[in-house]
Length: 241
Image 1: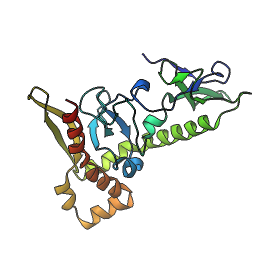
Image 2 (image 1 turned 180 degrees about the vertical axis):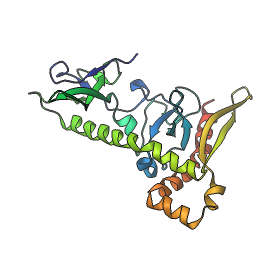
Image 3 (image 1 turned 120 degrees about the vertical axis):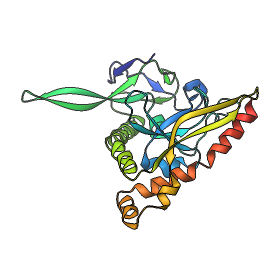
Image 4 (image 1 turned 90 degrees about the vertical axis):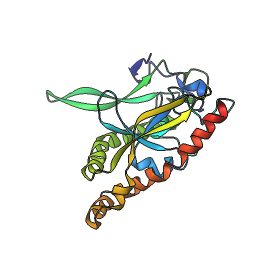
C-alpha cells in the first residue's frame, strides 16, 4: 500500500532514498510510462508500445520490460536492473507531484507540491541519497527530483494531444504478442497498439509536414524502431522458462 504524504524538511529531515535499481527496490515491473521526448533514448533498450489506461481510457505510451504482471526480463540473475536510460516515471520514485490550494487575496489557487511515498522500499534512514541538507535546505538530489517532476508534469499536459494527432490520421493499430509457455501452451498478450506503418507510408506530403512541424514524426519512427526489441524480450523469456 502506498502512503503518500507532503514532503517537508522537518518531518523527513533524516530520510534518504536508495537509488540503486533492482527487484528489491520495486523494479520487478513489466512496463513503465514514457513520453515522446524520451522515445529516442528508450528505443535503444526496450520496445515502446501504446495502450489505453484501464481507468481513464486515454492512450499512454509504455516501455515494455516483460509480458506478465511483475515480470521484468531485463533484471539480471542478481535481480539488478541496468539501463542506459531510465524513464522519468522511474527516476521520480518514490516522489510524485501533488496539488495544494493556496489563497491569494481570498482567491483559491492550485500550486504544485512534492509528495513522497513513505511505504516505498527505497525509503531509508541509513542508505541512499539524502533528501535534505543538515540545516534543512534541499539536497542536489532533491533539486534533480524537482526537475524530473516538473518535466513529468509538462509531459502530462501534452500527451493526450500527441495521441489525438496520431488518431486524426488513423496511425494507431492494435496488435498482440504471442508466445508459448513452459508447458507449450500458447499465451496471447493483447491490448497493445503501435504505429500502422502502411498508413504512415501512405500519408500525403502535407500530412507528413504537419507531423514533422509538431515534432511527432521522430517519435513515430522511434516507436517503429523499438519494436525490434520484442523478439529479444521473447528470447529472454524463453531462456528463463
